[in-house]
Length: 481
Ligand code: FAD
Ligand code: MLT
Ligand code: ZN
Image (cartoon, rainbow, N blue to C red; front, side, top):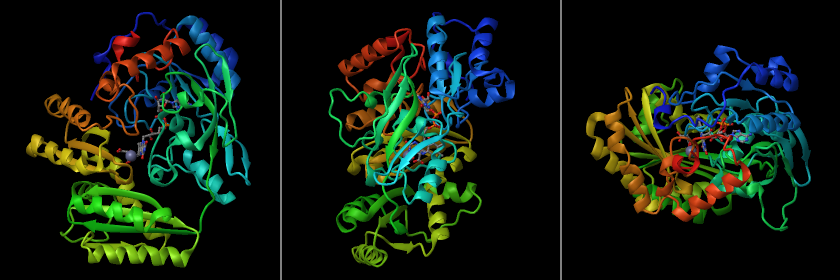
């Protein structure tokens, strides 16, 4: 894709770092945590999709909140722009520099600080990798209310900063509900201790929410406290085939009624996504390989009573077969089979990457209209591209992806602004869960009013008056340059 930096101008107010700056950082962090190694910088300058590439020559690795505070205070005084970076799995170009911004990696802040087995409240540093937290909690008999395909690399600080949704939101709700507290450092180095471990705290404005989903534009999250649910003994996963989209939609309504409190995931993929996974991921196998299904649904239930949960799920599946909402299906017999079903859904982003160039859209759209957009896009692009739809059906979250062998500006001009206009017309959101980043900074008005964006800009000006934090991202460039 090359660099998208051409879309924006480097803000000339920002300084370029010099040898004195490097010496100052080495004084705080030690020379091994001030990285100028080219190979390491290539990785940190490039996003997961290999679509966005910055040209930063400096990466800092603080180990404590105090170090983050000292770095930011100094960068602010020198007007050096910075990009906070977690696991660098973000999908909207938010986690890499656009130009020469200094990268601040949270990777070395990866300690679990405390876990209270009675309340289920975990306090940890922002750089903890999600999968490590999941394993830690598993040993304690608890689970994370958040799970996503990038768990092996993404960090909790990145999850909080993007307000990641993922595979369990249908059951546990968004991070705005599960994150009880954060510690964050402002652009001028002020440390905000909002690391509460309380379920209830109505003492005025709840400012932690500003850091949930603001993609590093208001401060660096250094610690978080999370409410985690106990691990329940009965987990079941079913992989189902549906002949058309309306059946998937009705199946969701039925699942909400019949599975109710035990429903923990409701994901869907179309046949085109399935074919991509089968063609590009080794080990992927379709458990219901007939041509009857144009759609697949993965349902997970989590409950406390093995036999009654199974009974409920089986009755639901039988009823759905009789009503012809599903044309076939399998219930995983063991954890390996359950993982193989999950691979078919979680493996789609990786399969898309292997297939070539990908134009990725993450949309909230009212359920009844959701798949019409995929069909319209397919008609628009004809045989020039492979248009696939999958996502978190239980949350009305569509991942519309267009796959082509090579990147082509002409294709992009057929997709955008159509996709945003369509979404806006149907009162959807142009970012359901991935955020705005660089990709959608100038598109925000499709989903937010002028007045709302203006207030966002005022908050940015108040908290980061020099705009050193993650510049060119989140807000329209006209408001921040
Ligand atoms: P990064 O990519 O490093 O950063 C993301 C943003 O947060 C950037 O703007 C960055 O500046 C900022 N940031 C990072 N850490 C901090 C911090 N400590 N303080 C302040 N700002 C910070 N997303 C979903 O919502 N749901 C999914 O189901 C999902 N599945 C995915 C599957 C795959 C295979 C991949 C590659 C990505 C997926 N994502 C998903 C997107 C991505 O993983 C999430 O957005 C994730 O939360 C990003 O975490 P990270 O640590 O990698 O953050
Ligand atoms: C997913 O649900 O798989 C992720 O959000 C990643 C993607 O949209 O490709
Ligand atoms: Zn997703």
